Amino acid sequence: MDYNFDVAIVTAVKIETESVMRLYDDWKEVKISSDTQVYYETSFEKDGVKRRVITAQQNEMGMTAASYLASKMISLFRPRYLIMVGIAAGIGAEQIYGDVIVPDVIWNYAAGKFVSAEKADITFGDIGFLPRPIAIEIDEEILSIIKALKDSPDNEFHLHIGPMACGNSVVANRDVVNKQIHSLFPKTAGLDMESYSVFYAAMHATEPKPKAIVIKSICDYADSEKSDQYQKFASYTSSRFAKFLYENYLKYE
Image 1 (cartoon, rainbow, N blue to C red):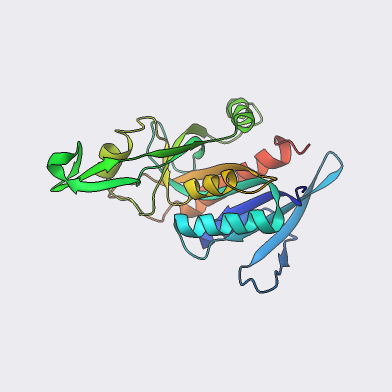
Image 2: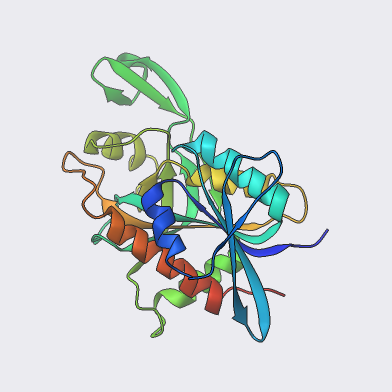
C-alpha cells in the first residue's frame, strides 16, 4: 500500500483551522460517503512534483477526539506526514507569545492514580497523585531536520525543542505545572490537550504508517492570567512554521 497524500494537517479548534485555511487559496472540500467529517484538500509543488495536502478539524477538544480524527485520516488518506498544528501553553524557560514548540517527546502527564495525600509525593490539599507517565518520541530523522532548522538563517521563527505534556484538562494553575509536570519531566516546554493522541494514532496505525509531527505555538503560560488574547497569533506562527517545514525540508522519497 502506498501513501495517497503527502501531508495531513490536524487541528483542534476553529481559530487553528482558520489559520491553516489561510495558507492556500485553493482548498477544495473532500466528501466521504456516510462520513459527516469535513475535509479539505490542496497541493503545493516541490522539485517539479505536485504534493497533496489534506486537513480537518476535530469535532471537540481533547485526546479522544484527536485520536479518532487522526486514525480516520490515516485510514482514509494514507498521509506520509501527520502534522498537528495549533496553540499550547508555554511552560519552559525563555518563552514568549508566538514561539513555536516542536516536541521531541510527548507524554501523558494525566496517567496515574489519585490517592490520599499521605500516600503520594505529589499532593493537592487532601488529594495525592501517583503518576504513571507514558511517553512517545518523535522520529529521529525528523528530529534531526528540526534541530538543523532551529539555528538555520532561513528560519525566521523562534523555535523550542523539548518535551510536550498532554492531558485532557485545561490548565490555568502553575501548581499543576510545578508539582505534576515539571517534577517528572523538568525540561517540559509545552502543555496541550491533544498531541499525545496524534502520536499514538500514528504509532499504532497499519502500514504505511505516517510520521507524526506536532507544531504548537505559545498562547499562554498555564497560569491564573491565562486568556485567549494571543491565540490568533500563536495559530498563525504554528501553521506558518508547519508550511515552511513541509514545503522546504521534509523528504518525500
